[in-house]
Length: 127
Image (cartoon, rainbow, N blue to C red; front, side):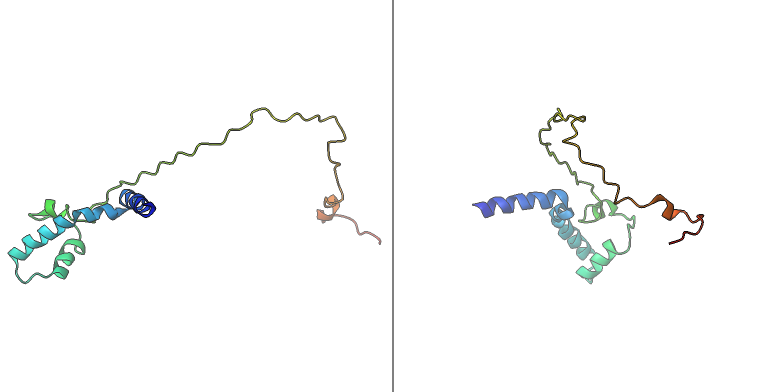
């Protein structure tokens, strides 16, 4: 049962957020190919695809039917909406007594670089 539910949600995701929904237009592809095949018996599938997908959007008599083919139009059907609820945040900061010297760390100046080492305009120093 879990596989069925997982497969269902994956299909919903794929059809909703990718261009996989264009596969629903396969029937329009087949019927349009059949119309062209009736008009030209020598037309094969490769030539049909070449005419409709690799020659640009040629405006001819059946332009409206050409635009119903899969992957001919760009549908911006992707809607990314996420609802992430933030965790509750405490608005009151913890009490901190700044004047209590036992809680404040001592300021260690031994790790600071000396200010005079960056200055190039200093007199020579005797060691």
